[in-house]
View (cartoon, rainbow, N blue to C red):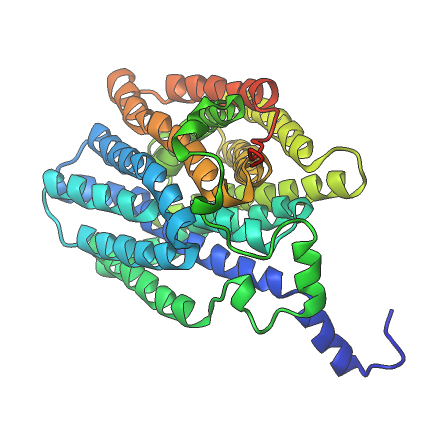
Length: 436
């Protein structure tokens, strides 16, 4: 209700000053979209790259695996670096690194060079989402982190969703190499604006006293470094909940990587979609992912707001239900034949999987002490991508050997379902700081 003492313009200005934290999410969302454009362009360029460079499906799967392994291994130092030296500094260096690696991919002509470029891409992209989790932890109270995380984590679906129509147009107009040149340059432009305009909460002049007090009431509002923690980084691996997050994210990323690398090829080879049609059809399932991310975060916020469940348990419940639903849908996919029902099932699958990833990243803020959110988030991501790195090459080998995608989807669905067991039965208690 409007205040009689304020004009509509003044009231709007006051409301805007009370919602600065939500503008921060937009930086994380845009950066995440660029991050995924730079890893998803391989799946769009794959058919033409296979023709020009003589690559097999196993080769394409191997490129996905190389990225995932380097991305996973760099999670461990990334989290520590972010907590130690600050989110803004590490993130900016990372964006520049992965943008140059993307640009380089368009210039190579041999499998060995492609492997090198994907290796560098994985190293550079590793800090992106741990940084977002860290920034979220000191800009948002715990009850809002699920929704905030769902918004920026939806970038991993916005990227693949908007990539097909845009990149297919560039592919047809300029060739596959242009995809990598253009997406690489976009990242450089973004990081320039980020460096100029993004501020941490303690340095933000736009943050009102009321909003600052609201954020700080739940322990946020200040960037805390790992040097302030009484817990040693290496001892994080001794906590049961951390291992549950590692194993649960592995189960999730296994099927996620199969969709990310092979969804366009599956539509082309099994449903005989033309290259022009691919630009639309390949983007549709990712819309379900966007919805799952945001709506899943909204549900966890509502459960916490109404006192139905504590923030940590709201996220665990959502993950468990969505993991079981994703398992059922993924297993059915290879047994249907119409393009409409296939796209419907893929959309549902990515909706459920995305709700898991968003809640899992937000869960890091509930499990970890404030000074180690990036470290715990990156360790979870390490588990997901190191183990999940096998899925593209395994799926590629299955398809090359059997001539069918059936076993790849059935096994992927069963593994995805195991995420429910990991997050519900193993992830229970937060890590407590030791009192001096």
